[in-house]
Image (cartoon, rainbow, N blue to C red; front, side):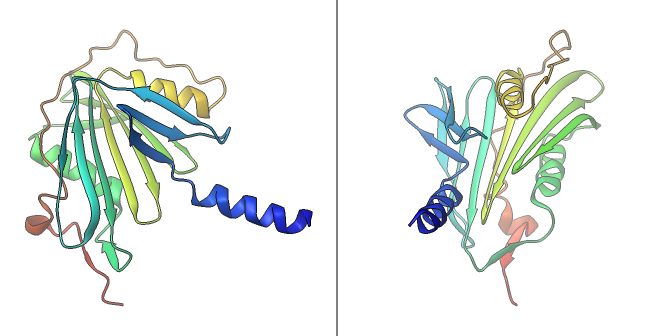
Length: 188
């Protein structure tokens, strides 16, 4: 009986989403199998639509911008999602430079710190699941350092004294898919 219980528990764990937005909080599944909650307030949420997407939305607050994209099972990205999003971000904001200062990959989480236009720091958290990608731009580093310190022992946030920027990023990769072909139907 213990063997079947272990299999069922493994299936249940594998089916739990890594990211949830509910009750005015961003929730992230961490190693402890519990969700870390990060409350947000004063945010604007917009639903995004595309023929290749099941669910998509953006959330914008004073310190965060999040884009959640869940594509159909018969859809495919036309490149690596994080790289496409970086290029999209750089192009849409007409940035001169986007220098990577730090990158940490832990399971289905990627944490990247950028120096933007040689002037300020910006953080991106990329969370990926099967057919679902979440991109979070964090201008102050609060969410970035909180999650990363929970996932990586002895992590020290070293950008406390660096200039933090503000972004007015109210666009969507999903909204621009028709023009740039970020993802489409998997013809295979």
